[in-house]
Amino acid sequence: MRASARRPTANAAGLRPPAAGRLALGLDIGGSHMAAGLVDASGRVHGWRRRALDAACHPDRAMETAAALLDEVLAAHPEQASQVVGVGMGLPGMVEVTGGRLVFAPNLRWTDYPAADRLAGLTGLAVVADNDARLATLAEALFGAARGCSDVLGVIIGTGIGGGIILDGRLFRGPGGTAGEIGHLTLDLDGPACRCGNRGCLETLVAGPAIAAAGRAALARAVQEDRPGPLRSLCEDDPAAVTAAAVSAAAAAGDQAAREILARAGTWLGIALAGCCNLINPRLVVVGGGVAEAGELLLGPARCEIARRTMSVPRAMVDVVTGELGAMAGVIGAGALVLGDY
View (cartoon, rainbow, N blue to C red):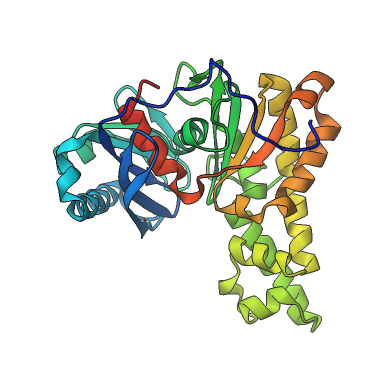
């Protein structure tokens, strides 16, 4: 692995942005939030909107909320409504891309749901759908940290962990459309139960809920031992206030237990990424999602494991960077799915 993470040299085989002149509505549905906006061919988002999503929400209700959110976006930009050619939707799980059917979303417990058809019926617009992490990876490849790179692994860490793969300048979906599910690589044979039905998946060790759970345990120990520190101060000794973001903030403020939590998560992440680098030989790994905002406290340990565990050729070629598009990546990728041939 190269010592300094930098953007790779542009490659003629890299993904090409869509043609100018049209707009799409991008909708990103995750494990705990949904977001929407108008996306143009340069990757700009207009009328950004975001809503919380209850994991217990019925998918029909979620689609009604999504349709209302899209209406809000259009209402904020009525002069551009006639340029909208359709809706792109990112979904947090396995998606049958040809029909826009959600096969399984572990963190929402949605199964065999005709998401694209349902949203099209509510909005009167054509709808296409794909996996949310794959679309975030697409956005980073077109407009963000991976633009110009033809071989990319994207890893999106939030409520769950998803991934996207770009090989030879094309999105790789696999014959069933499920390629990129890095969050469900088994790392610990006797590890925590995962909502996918397995045990010890990467998601159970590194995603936001896992970091928050470790933070609550650290807070309880600190309270019991009467040890002051940033985690206690930030959360005011309230376990309900401990989130992955709070753990990251405490770690940035010097809380040793919080730093150890992120280092352990980064180690697990690096072990998984090393295997992926050996398998597909990407030039760039882009890590996004809310948990990635921990930065080097997470990615530093991950890079160490990649350096230790990856074979010499893929190790020498790969860079690991954080995404540039932040929370908008999924919406941008969803819009791009409509505007381009990906």
